[in-house]
Image (cartoon, rainbow, N blue to C red):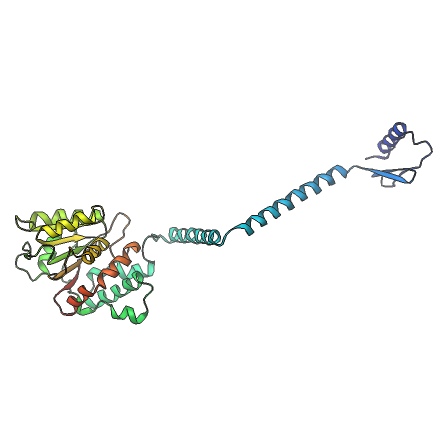
Length: 318
C-alpha cells in the first residue's frame, strides 16, 4: 500500500471517529498505519487478510491430520491385519503379473519341478512329488514328511510311453500299464475299482469319463465320475449299487468317498495321476495351488500307502 493511500485511509478514519489531536503515524516502509487514541492502537496491513487466510487453512489442515490420527487409533487389530493382508496380496499380484506367474499356482520354483513330472523316471517323479507333499501339508515337520514320502518303488516307469499324453490316448496308456487282461472287468463287490484316475477339475473328469465309458462300460460294470458338482450322497449311492471297474474324480471328492466308505481301495491296482493335462491357464493337477492339500492328503492316506508299500497298488503318472 502506498503512503498516499495509507494517509487517505487514516483521514477517513479520523473523520469517522473524530480523533482530533490523537496521534497518527505512518511507518517508513509505508506498509502500516497506527492510530493511537487514549493509549489504544490498531494497525492496517496489506497482508493481514492473506495471513488470516493462511492461518485458517493451516488450522483446518491440522484438524484434518488430528482427525485422521484419531481414525487410525480407532482401527481394531483385526482391521489392521486385514489391511496388511490386502496390501500384501496386492503386492503379490503385481509381482505375479510382472513375472508372468499365475497367483493360483504353486510358486514358480516349485512349478518348474512339477510341470514335466509325468515324463520323468520314477526317481525324478518321487522327488517332485515330495515337493508337492511339502507344499500341500506345510505344517508337517521334515520327519513327518519323510514318513509319508512317495517312494520310488511306488511308481511305474512310464518314460517309454512315446508321443503326446492327450485325452485321446488315455485308454491306450491305461492298457499299456495295467496287469489286467480285460480292463473293462470289475470286482464283484460294488465300489471297488481296480483303476482310479485323479484329474484337476470336474470338467476334465467329465472329459476323461466320456473317453473311458464307450470302451470300458459294460452291461455289468460301470465307469464312475466323482466330483463336487454332484451330491456326495448321490455318488455314494451309485458306488454302493454298481460294480465299478474304473473311476475318475478330483482329489477332494475321491478322498471324501474313501473316508465315507462307499469307495473302497481294497482292490485298487492303479492310481493314475492325470498330470499332463493343462487347463486354459496352463495349470496342471500338480501345479494348482488349491489342489495341493487334497492331493497330498489323498496320497498320504494309510490304506493307500499300505497297498503301495506291498506293491498291490502302483502309482502311475499320465
